[in-house]
Image (cartoon, rainbow, N blue to C red; front, side, top):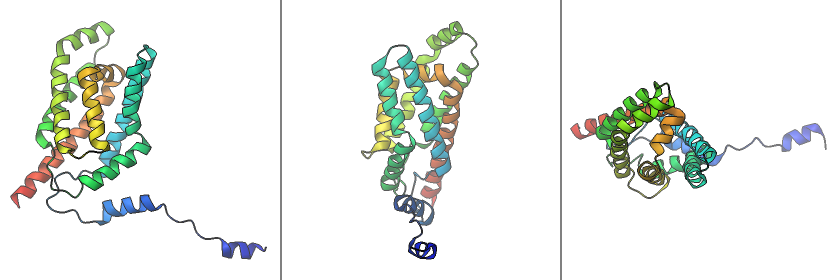
Length: 216
């Protein structure tokens, strides 16, 4: 077989169909004016990536202190937020929420996120374990309440069964029963603050979009 014959027989690689379809849906399909859950793709991807990183470190910390069951739970949530799991989250969003008129949690979630951002910023400035323990005793109840408000709003927004609702449900249980906020503040208060800032921007944007549509 000659080199020219081999070249003639070689076909150009085909694009990965699911990726092509996903990109086409996101960027080419017009969004109905009533959509209240449209979010910027880049911000959502950054939020998922930061969340995966933080939960992975929480899992490692739990394993290091001998709490194997808690580490497994944290790893499970992190796997849902991994690069592979993000495909499932993205498809769930496209299928149930991107083109729907359902209302997100908007300003109520943004307000709860603001309270958590302030708490994470304060925790990141603590310099000793004793200061951190004292601060946690004073403030943990308040920040857990803010997290509950945020997560309850997300459960209302993600009302369809699927990966998005599964992640929120698992995180809610960990916050209420597994002291997830304590672990996140210990291993990465600044990272928690960063992902909450992104989340707050998304919630505020959803609220503005919803308000604009209701006025049309």
